[in-house]
Length: 391
Ligand code: ADP
Ligand code: MG
Image (cartoon, helix red, strand yellow):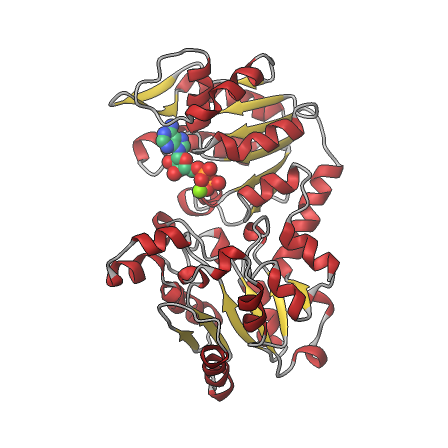
């Protein structure tokens, strides 16, 4: 794999770099984008941007936001732009970099020479050094991993940089196919994620605890399976806990759970390693948080742990009334001496946005990956990383 960090002014000066980042940040976390208050995925792209600017390169930022099918489902043009446009990020990036940003707007991409020729011309003619291309998923080609589209995207620059660890588990045109058509590098963020997470897998320490919450159990099953022998405990909360409770025939009312996963959950329940909440907070027939007894039990286990992996809030934490469990667990981790790896847009927001802990101790690492982190730690080869090794 080639790393951007190995390049310098000689290789980069005057070059146009296609920089794939991940702006797929939950709406809730984008409500107030200020330089003091930035979700992790946004904050994490600046080292690479600054490196490129210092080395006199031009940057064309590529990203997606939302799924193509959801973008298409929004028929109202104004609302669609409001929800899915990347223009939202222009102001905060301009401020943070002190640069003029040119936004390249469109409603849909046509994979034609004329369409891409125009974009290329506007980049060449501009005095700006940073460009943001509108949401790649406004067209279907991105998620199709379309070669023709990737080739044209590649034609916009001289080198390609993947700095979107959190999308590297997806076969998308601007993550995988593009690498076939242009010299490609791992950006500073991707390099850091690979380094730290690889070390984590190699140097597991015990007691080792995996904390899992969030909405979907199917996302996290890989991690449970892959760490089943290694981990001492899986502390479960959130929608996943509800699915496990449904598997125990516990009445969960209208709580969020995954019906299709109940049978799988039943199998895991046979193990004593799976720890479920012993008390929960219920509102309008829904289980929305873990209760005080569970907080205490989980915090005690965290205190003793030498190794912690966490993905997924333990309750419906967007509502402050149900954020107590997730916040208490975050605080227990902040106090612990164990090595902690925390991933996922919403889980990491507990640290940098809700608790405003910006300078974390070196034993705690916030990963920008959610699904990507789980797959990486689970031992899977992520397609976006694999192609960087192959080409
Ligand atoms: P991350 O973004 O950190 O990877 P996920 O996307 O997997 O985390 O899950 C976060 C979502 O799960 C949040 O929107 C949160 O409100 C939701 N959630 C967690 N527990 C519950 C619950 N008990 N009921 C409803 N939603 C929940
Ligand atoms: Mg999420």
